[in-house]
Amino acid sequence: MSLIEKDHIEAGALPGPSLAGVGDYLALLKPRVMSLVVFTALTGIVAAPHGLHPVLAAISLFCIAIGAGASGALNMWWDADIDAVMTRTVNRPVPSGRVTPGEALAFGMTLSVGSVLMLGLTANWLAAGLLAFTIFFYVVIYTMWLKRWTPQNIVIGGLAGAMPPMVGWAAAAGSVGLEAAVMVAIIFMWTPPHFWALALIKSDDYARAGVPMLPVVAGPDETRRQILLYALALAPLGVVPAFIGLGGLVYLIVSIIVGAIFVQRAWMVYRLREGESARRAAGQLFGFSLIHLSALFFVLLAEKAAGAPAFTAPFHGWM
Amino acid sequence: MAGEEHKGIVLTEEQKRRRNARSVAIAVALAVLVALFYLVTIFKMGGNVANRPL
Image (cartoon, rainbow over the protein chains, first blue to last red):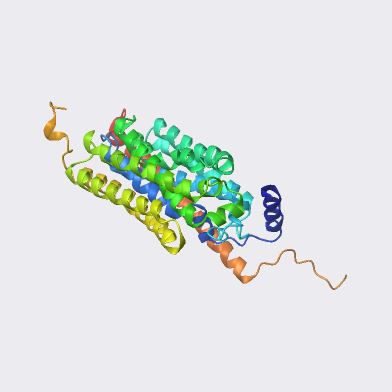
C-alpha cells in the first residue's frame, strides 16, 4: 500500500513549477516539536557546568533546533504516504503536493549535515556526534524501521526525542553526566503515555494508515494498562533530579505535584473505557502531559538561571 | 505553426509571488549563515585575536 501511494504522490508532484511557499518549508521543520526540543536542550545547556560563551551557547541551541527540524523534514519525506491518509497530517506540505518529496529530502539532508557541522565547529564534536545520532535514530531507526513494524515504535523511537537535553549538556560541558542521562530518561519514560493517549483518540487514523500503534495492535485496554504503568514509573523518576544535585526545593515540590496529577490522569484513562468520557480522559492526559514535561524543565531552567541551590546542597557530606 | 509562439512554462502571479518569497528566504538564510560563521569565529578566538606577532 505504502509504495503505491508514495509513487502516486511523487508522480503527481512532478509536473509544473513549485507551489511551495516559505511557510511550507517552515512546516517541514515541525515547529511545535522543535519548540519542545529547544526548551529541553536549553535546559541541558543551562544546567550543565558552564564552559561555553553565551553567544556560542545560543548558536549551539540554534543548531540543535535546526537538526531537530531537519529530522522532521526527513520524517515527512518518508512518511508522506501515511500522512496522506491521516486526518491530522493530510494537509502537511508533502502529501498536499505543495512540496515534492525530493525537495523535502534535499531540504532535510542539507539542514541535517549543516546543523551537525555547525554544532561541531561552534561547541564540540561530542555534541555534534550526539546530534547526528539523534537525527539518524529518529529518521532511520524510528521513521523508516520501527514506526511501521512494531507497536513498541514510540517506546524505542522516543529516545530520539529524549536526547536534546544531553546534546545541549554536551555542547556546554564537553561531556555527558548522570544529570543529562536522568533528563533523557524522564523524556524517554514520558513519551509512551503521551503518544498513546493521542493514539487512543486517533486509533482509527493509525489503523487506516497501517501504523501498528499499540491501540491498533494490542487494543485500547492493554494501551490503558501500559499508560498507567509508564505513569507510575514516570512519577518517581521525575523527582530524581532533586536528589542528584540537579533540581532544588521548588523542583522537588513541583515534580511531586505534577507527577501525582499525571498518575491521576492516567488512572482516569485506565478506569473510563467507554464513550465520550473515555475520549475526554485520554485527551486530558495528552494535554496534561505537555504541561507536565514543560513544568519540570521550566523549573529546572528557572532554578539554574536564578542560581538556586540544589535540594541536596545542605546535606553534602551526609549523602 | 507559424503563428504559434513557444512560451515554455508561464508562471501564474501566485507562483511568481511564492518564488520571490522563497528567493528572499534563501537570501536571508545565507545572510544568517554568514553572521553565524562570523560570530563563531570571533567568539571562539576571544582574546587570542590580539595574540599575534606584530
